[in-house]
Length: 125
Image (cartoon, rainbow, N blue to C red; front, side, top):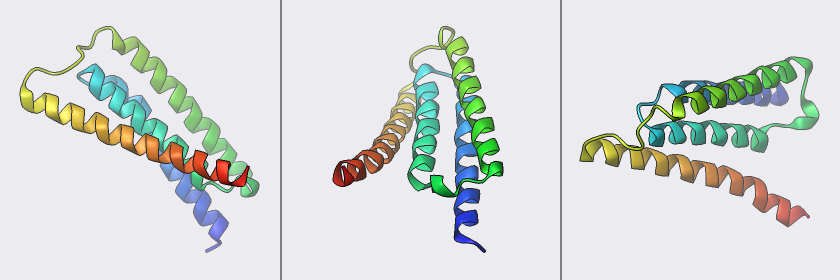
Protein backbone atom coordinates (compact mmCIF):
# COMPACT_ATOMS: atom_id res chain seq x y z
CA UNK A 1 0.00 0.00 0.00
CA UNK A 2 1.20 3.49 -0.84
CA UNK A 3 2.44 5.28 2.36
CA UNK A 4 0.78 8.56 1.32
CA UNK A 5 -2.57 6.81 0.84
CA UNK A 6 -2.19 5.03 4.18
CA UNK A 7 -1.45 8.37 5.88
CA UNK A 8 -4.49 9.98 4.26
CA UNK A 9 -6.78 7.14 5.31
CA UNK A 10 -5.47 7.34 8.88
CA UNK A 11 -5.96 11.11 8.90
CA UNK A 12 -9.48 10.75 7.53
CA UNK A 13 -10.37 8.32 10.32
CA UNK A 14 -8.86 10.55 13.01
CA UNK A 15 -10.59 13.70 11.80
CA UNK A 16 -13.93 11.88 11.45
CA UNK A 17 -13.53 10.63 15.04
CA UNK A 18 -12.87 14.21 16.16
CA UNK A 19 -15.95 15.49 14.32
CA UNK A 20 -18.04 12.77 15.95
CA UNK A 21 -16.65 13.78 19.36
CA UNK A 22 -17.59 17.41 18.69
CA UNK A 23 -21.13 16.46 17.69
CA UNK A 24 -21.67 14.11 20.64
CA UNK A 25 -20.38 16.75 23.07
CA UNK A 26 -23.83 18.36 23.14
CA UNK A 27 -25.28 15.20 24.74
CA UNK A 28 -23.01 15.54 27.78
CA UNK A 29 -24.69 15.61 31.20
CA UNK A 30 -22.56 18.50 32.52
CA UNK A 31 -20.52 21.41 31.23
CA UNK A 32 -17.30 19.77 32.39
CA UNK A 33 -17.95 16.68 30.24
CA UNK A 34 -18.98 18.92 27.34
CA UNK A 35 -15.67 20.79 27.56
CA UNK A 36 -13.80 17.50 27.82
CA UNK A 37 -15.44 16.19 24.64
CA UNK A 38 -14.70 19.42 22.79
CA UNK A 39 -11.06 19.22 23.89
CA UNK A 40 -10.85 15.67 22.51
CA UNK A 41 -12.24 16.96 19.21
CA UNK A 42 -9.68 19.78 19.17
CA UNK A 43 -6.88 17.31 19.93
CA UNK A 44 -7.95 15.15 16.98
CA UNK A 45 -7.96 18.17 14.68
CA UNK A 46 -4.47 19.16 15.85
CA UNK A 47 -3.28 15.58 15.52
CA UNK A 48 -4.39 15.45 11.89
CA UNK A 49 -2.59 18.72 11.28
CA UNK A 50 0.50 17.13 12.79
CA UNK A 51 0.52 13.88 10.82
CA UNK A 52 -1.11 14.88 7.53
CA UNK A 53 1.11 15.38 4.52
CA UNK A 54 -0.48 18.48 3.00
CA UNK A 55 1.56 18.24 -0.18
CA UNK A 56 -0.01 14.86 -0.95
CA UNK A 57 -3.63 15.77 -0.45
CA UNK A 58 -5.87 14.39 -3.16
CA UNK A 59 -9.38 15.45 -4.06
CA UNK A 60 -11.10 12.82 -1.93
CA UNK A 61 -9.23 13.83 1.23
CA UNK A 62 -10.10 17.49 0.75
CA UNK A 63 -13.78 16.52 0.61
CA UNK A 64 -13.44 14.45 3.78
CA UNK A 65 -11.60 17.36 5.45
CA UNK A 66 -14.35 19.85 4.52
CA UNK A 67 -17.13 17.48 5.58
CA UNK A 68 -15.50 16.87 8.94
CA UNK A 69 -14.85 20.58 9.50
CA UNK A 70 -18.57 21.08 8.91
CA UNK A 71 -19.13 18.44 11.60
CA UNK A 72 -16.87 20.39 13.95
CA UNK A 73 -18.78 23.60 13.32
CA UNK A 74 -22.12 21.86 13.80
CA UNK A 75 -20.85 20.22 17.01
CA UNK A 76 -19.74 23.56 18.46
CA UNK A 77 -23.13 25.04 17.52
CA UNK A 78 -24.95 22.19 19.32
CA UNK A 79 -22.66 22.56 22.34
CA UNK A 80 -23.35 26.30 22.52
CA UNK A 81 -27.10 25.64 22.44
CA UNK A 82 -26.87 23.02 25.21
CA UNK A 83 -24.47 25.03 27.42
CA UNK A 84 -27.05 27.10 29.32
CA UNK A 85 -29.16 24.09 30.37
CA UNK A 86 -26.26 22.08 31.80
CA UNK A 87 -24.92 22.16 35.38
CA UNK A 88 -21.20 22.67 35.85
CA UNK A 89 -20.52 19.39 37.63
CA UNK A 90 -22.50 16.26 38.50
CA UNK A 91 -23.75 15.44 41.96
CA UNK A 92 -21.67 12.96 43.88
CA UNK A 93 -17.96 12.71 44.61
CA UNK A 94 -17.29 9.79 42.26
CA UNK A 95 -18.94 11.54 39.32
CA UNK A 96 -16.97 14.73 40.00
CA UNK A 97 -13.68 12.82 40.11
CA UNK A 98 -14.50 11.08 36.86
CA UNK A 99 -15.37 14.38 35.16
CA UNK A 100 -12.24 16.15 36.37
CA UNK A 101 -10.07 13.18 35.33
CA UNK A 102 -11.65 13.18 31.88
CA UNK A 103 -11.13 16.93 31.51
CA UNK A 104 -7.50 16.59 32.67
CA UNK A 105 -6.73 13.82 30.17
CA UNK A 106 -8.36 15.85 27.39
CA UNK A 107 -6.34 18.92 28.35
CA UNK A 108 -3.07 16.99 28.38
CA UNK A 109 -3.86 15.46 24.96
CA UNK A 110 -4.62 18.89 23.52
CA UNK A 111 -1.51 20.46 25.03
CA UNK A 112 0.67 17.60 23.75
CA UNK A 113 -0.73 17.88 20.22
CA UNK A 114 -0.38 21.66 20.26
CA UNK A 115 3.17 21.38 21.60
CA UNK A 116 4.04 18.87 18.92
CA UNK A 117 2.94 21.46 16.38
CA UNK A 118 4.61 24.52 17.92
CA UNK A 119 7.99 23.14 19.01
CA UNK A 120 9.05 21.90 15.53
CA UNK A 121 7.94 25.24 14.12
CA UNK A 122 10.30 27.04 16.51
CA UNK A 123 13.14 24.66 15.64
CA UNK A 124 12.67 25.08 11.89
CA UNK A 125 11.98 28.83 12.00
